[in-house]
Image (cartoon, rainbow, N blue to C red; front, side, top):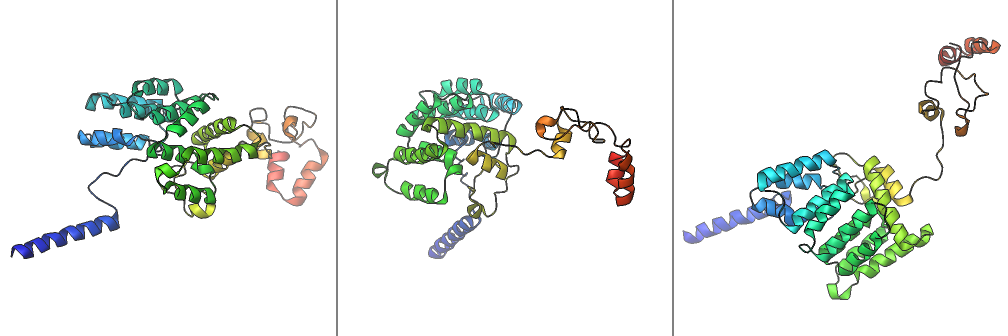
Length: 327
């Protein structure tokens, strides 16, 4: 009987392990993504019984999250009330990254100063670089390369995830294969320098300028082209989009190609512009220069006074022509 009981217990454990493997649901909390959230801060809150606070922290630092100042302030108030506030260096690193997401470089730097000496030096340099890039300061490149030189497994992964959106499929495969080598047989910094050298040469700028441009573009795309919801893009490999992309297709193009050099104008765009708004009732003021900078004349009054206007409208039967141009 004891043997039968032991076999039965073993069978239940095996079935449980199989179910966990198939469904992907286990009792151990899944680690937070290293790109945005320091895992120790998350797991420390869980260990202290602050499950809800830990989930809220993870949600605010999720790849597709975009907290504003009020969101960060509200969360910090809750953290102080429910768990005596941030304590470890990784707690302050998490706060610095929330302020980075909110676009506040000063508060991010203040929080990062409280983490200095209590987190790996590579992570400190890397977030110093992010803060400088948020301010559009080229000096952040020095911290970027310092972080690269000191990077351990976690820091190297974070650096790569920030630039993965630029990588070609061949570069992604090369990085994945490169990371399987023993740490003593690879040089992460040399890989990233080659990565940036190619893009700087294609853009006709220096390497540091190209890195700064990338972070400025990602900030703009995060503010204007951020993906909503939690559904990952379909056919991401076929479309050349990383599976963890924060931006929609417009943001993807903006980050990779930069701002457009020209912007085509349409009548609808002219009608909604501040200089031409409300002047689309009929194209009469062809002598005006109010909107000529966009290549189209100002439209201000009706064409009813033009002899052929009503005749054309009646002959064509175009209601829009008759109602909008001939009044």
